[in-house]
Image 1 (cartoon, one colour):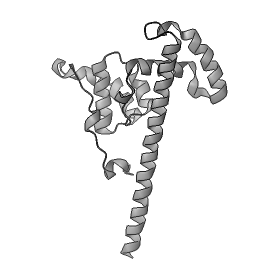
Image 2 (spheres, one colour):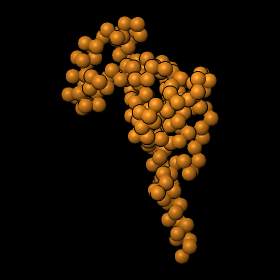
Image 3 (cartoon, helix red, strand yellow):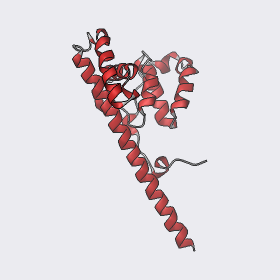
Image 4 (cartoon, helix red, strand yellow):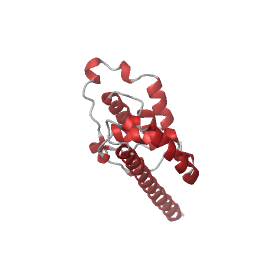
Length: 171
C-alpha cells in the first residue's frame, strides 16, 4: 500500500518538476524574443539616441503585427520591448525568474538601483506580478535608508533552485 503512495508521489514530483522546467524555458524564450524585438526596433530607428523619434515606425509595424499575431504586438507592447532593450542592453543580464509581466511593471522605473531592489525582492520572495505591483505601489524602495539605496546589485548569480522551489506549494 505504501509503495503505491510513493510511486504516485514520485510521478507527481516528476511531472511538476518537468512542467516547471518547461515553463521556465518558455519564459526565457519569450524574454529573449521581446529583448530581440526591442533591439531590432532600436536599430531600425537609427540607434539608441534616435530611437525615441521613431514612434511612427512602431505604430505602423504594430498595426501589421497585431493583425497577423494578435494584441501581444500592440503599439504599447512594442514600445515596452524597445524600452526593455534600452534598459537591459546585454541580454544575459535578464533574470529568468521574472516574467515579461514583471518586467513591464519595472520599465517605468527610472532609477537602476530601484529596479534592482525590486528585482531582488521578486527573486528572494518569489513574488507574483500582483505582489510586485503592490510592493511598487507601496513605495517600499523609498522607505529604505539612503545608504541602503546606493549601489544595489542584482543577486542573479547566487540563485539555485531546489525541488521545493520548483514545485508550487498548493496551500
